[in-house]
Amino acid sequence: MAFLVGSFEPTLQRLAVPAVCLLVAFLAYTPQWLFANAPDLAPGPLTPAEFYTFNTLLICLWYTYYKACTVDPGRYLFPPNYKKKQNKEKTVGSDGEEAEQVREGAGARNGQLRRWCKKCSAPKPPRAHHCKTCRRCIPKMDHHCPWTSNCVSLQTFPHFLRFLVYTNLSLWTLLYFLSQRFLALWESRHLPAYLGPTLFQLALLTVLTFAAGVTSLALGILLATTLKGWLFNTTMIESWEIERHESALERRYASSSSSSPDDGSWWASGERAPGGDTDAPHLSLEPVEFPYDLGIFANMAAAMGTRNPLLWLVPLAGGPTIAPYPYSDDPGAEAATGGKKKTTTGWEYEENGLNDREGLWPPADPEKIRHAKLWRRRQREADLALEQARHERPPRPDDERDAFRRRQERDLRRWEASRSRILGELEELAPEYVDESYLVDGEAYEPRYVRGGRSMAGGGIVLDEGKSGWVNADGEHLGDYGVDEDAEFDEPPVEEEGVIVQNVEEDEDVPLAELIRRRKVRTKDGEDT
Image 1 (cartoon, rainbow, N blue to C red):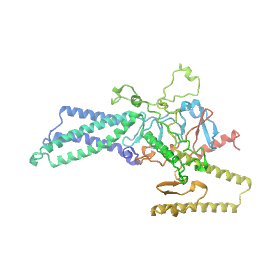
Image 2 (spheres, helix red, strand yellow; image 1 turned 90 degrees about the vertical axis):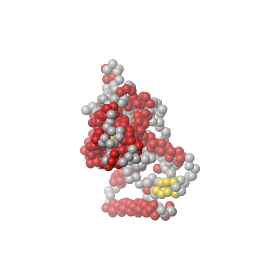
Image 3 (tube, rainbow, N blue to C red; image 1 turned 180 degrees about the vertical axis):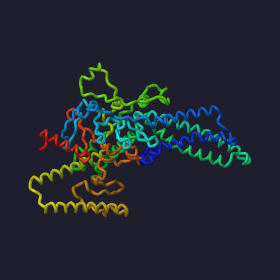
Image 4 (cartoon, rainbow, N blue to C red; image 1 turned 135 degrees about the vertical axis):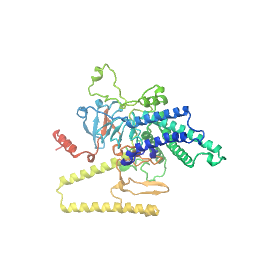
């Protein structure tokens, strides 16, 4: 589906909507002109019933396309003083990382607002994703559609679905009209050529049929995918996440059933996990059921914003809209409103209760957790060693030069090993010819090769730390749906003493002014000297 919903270059994105309008106009009005001006093309012009039916579908198509392009996909608006009022406390997690506590008043209760978007610098509600084109978190983001230059989301999904329905109905109607003309040509194939349509009319009829057929095939696939998501309350992004989670479970079960102790797989056992970590992510990986499938009718009603089926495909009907910020830090605010609960559309979603607790979706990607923890641990160890060396004795120029040379040698060995591994893959060398002399600093630099058709890998050098390199069966990354993958690196939240702890962004992602401000705050509070 990437060729239908994938993101284009910015220049091409600006041309997508005009191109769609030109294609619709060509397929909508050129056939009517041809049928009206080609009397020899049986069965002749459209009848009044056919004319009004076809043009009514076209009016619905144009209006729903306009709504799909112009309706705002939604945005999360927090109170102006939200960051000052919310009760945040810096803590130290079990792995030594700074963490941020989001307490009850900020919507952390019932598992809500436990994710943090480092691009928006704000909490990220469930099912929301940061769109790299819209540059904000989109509620219940399905994908960013370049053909509408808009996100398919909680607010735009009903209009997008209606547009697909009326577009496919219009194309099927057009193909029916065109098939009538081709059938008439086949029946009159034995007549003299001068009694039939001209060559130009035949060529135009062929071009129209080909364009309508290809467009109908592509949009039919997209309609089937969208209807599946509508019935089961899944977005395209969530379908990708479901496939990734199932793949992770398959790898875990396949490696755990392996009886070979030398398979070298990180998934095989806790002893071969990085650093011998018995709490390695793959060991704690448990099946998570998709929690938002509430039943076919409930799913369809929730997506369309009404339980009245007669309004679901009406072009003038609306759809769900995201509610204002529903949470309050004041415990007596709900009592002041008579106990009436505020609308939480777009902020909370009903779950089916198949999991032990709410808020487990999306399940964590073990590979991302492993890579991030590995590099952060090494960074902390290096910083600690450097700090201890500075306190023990002043650095001497000779020692600094020697340390620099050692780092150069390690980098050179890693480069040579990477080069030999690449050449070995190109020349299809046996594993014993792979240079393993560069083993430095443990498993992070172990070679990766194949033996007996199975991947034999250590940690591997992480080139894109925090990004998911996993692709689904169609070869699609998460970014192919318009998601900003840099903002999607969410570590699983940790719950300590009933408080949700959410890891904050890395220091290199924080502006310098913000780092200086945090340093001043810690110094003032006596936490730093």
